[in-house]
Length: 136
Image (cartoon, rainbow, N blue to C red; front, side, top):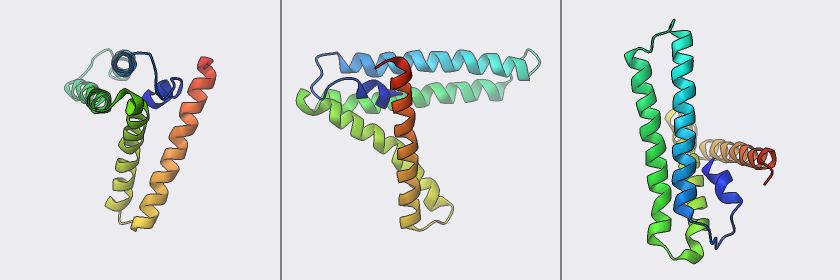
């Protein structure tokens, strides 16, 4: 979602990039938390157990971690490259775990790289669909 949000701003955006990063992250995290807790209650017969709560907390921490890491290029790099660097970093946050999954199941470096590339293509399609549906 952050990649999709950053896709609609120019490379040298005059909009507050940190606002996009944190606003998108907090809004999406709260929406997911609401949906997750509602689904957990439906499946759990009206109760949310400890495992569900821990999973929700892990999701929030993960979202905050991604936003924090995505904020680093904005805070550390010149304005002229912050958007491109943030996009690149977010792509890495998708590709690196995908590559790691491939390697963890015994795939070769090449197969793991192909898997990571396919995941990036899929993520790109999702970002495009999101922007088309949002009218950007």
